[in-house]
Length: 592
Image 1 (cartoon, rainbow, N blue to C red):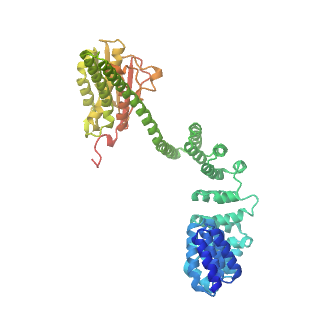
Image 2 (image 1 turned 30 degrees about the horizontal axis):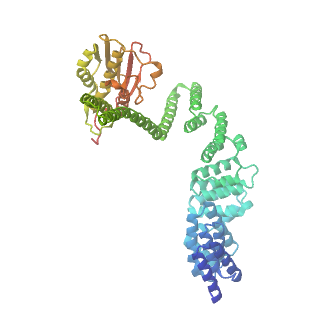
Image 3 (image 1 turned 60 degrees about the vertical axis):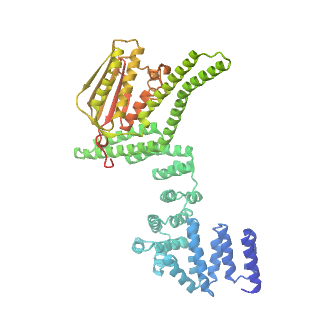
């Protein structure tokens, strides 16, 4: 570098250091015009473009740098550094294009043999094309030539495969055999050389009118795997017309495309178009069924499920009796798919559901706590005012104390209602469910007698669970107390009845709990398990906060159990409790 070129370089370096890249690039291009054979400024220009993340101009500048390295091969290290950086940062299709240009420069004799050798030594076989293979590719007009290509590919490295594809793209019309091109695309996809495969697909699609449906599907599938559709969008017009003229395989890929772009309108039209293909095909119908579940189209899924069953029935009535087992396996597979998708949907939406439930719970809890606190504050403020005016009496002070005690007791009762489901103190042990229920009735027997209520408990077998015995007993304390209040409010003093029975039904514990109270009105049936829903007077001191059945539901949920109201029961209210008989419900896990 002479004095003048050194001055130019120093000026460019200062501009680059100051962050003035656009002016630095302009000065660098001026230097190239002044010293066209000097490879140094091409390198600097490439670095400036790369710093700007101009992934089109940067490799072009470095390619010119590479072409001028014949006299200074020691500068090849700078190119090698850039090449590694570029291929790790730039989009895959641009990397492929850059390699393609280097190969073409090699074939055109623009790269010195010594530099070509350095490329092969540094980057392996990426820049090597066997002469014999070139001949085969250009004459691949028969199945015999395709066999030779396949034989070569079977033992080829990833770099050799890349080189074959680069050569195929570069030769264009030379390699006209469709089977050969489609084979190379499938090989590239299998080896996850997606960018290379897309380049080859693009070269073919650009020359086909209309494009081959198989290549359209391949292009969309590779785009899905890369989660990047920009290359497909450049080659295809993805609109309603494509949906209508495509087969099921392309429509399958279009579902993922429209979902990724958020185009719900065209997504819906694609699913509607796919329904025609599902009319007679069980595999297609099942695929569409899973899409319906994915996009929360449950009504469509239900209708299609019925259609699938009809197809299965029709298929197997045409088969021999010894193939009946196949039907069971297909049904089981279908059920497993459905169940897995339902679980996935629950998992995806559980967080939102829990947050909404927590919001409602806290809102109700705040409201319920606010009433007794407001009562206490009002009484205290009133008494303070009377004392300041000199008209307060000791009787009024005593009345204030009584009010505070009543209201704080009400708060305490409400907190006690929550304790079974939020307490961290829990003793896990095996306990007899029958004994729990009997103990609850025994503990409340005096109060039941005061209300004139009789009770009975029927048991057909002794059943044990593993968990917190006291917590589980709370289920029946709450149920009995609810029944007592319902019977009393209905005016059945002396005629009240509570019955409970326990049995095992289909690998589950079933407990029926009934009373002869007024029952639960139809309008309230869907609300009874919600927190803070109650038809009772919350100031009575006997409950009414609307937490009893909410706590029951949560405790049973810990045992994977359920509770529901028997709508057919006419003589009061009856609850049906079911708890699955599973290993974790009966004995401690290995961690306990």
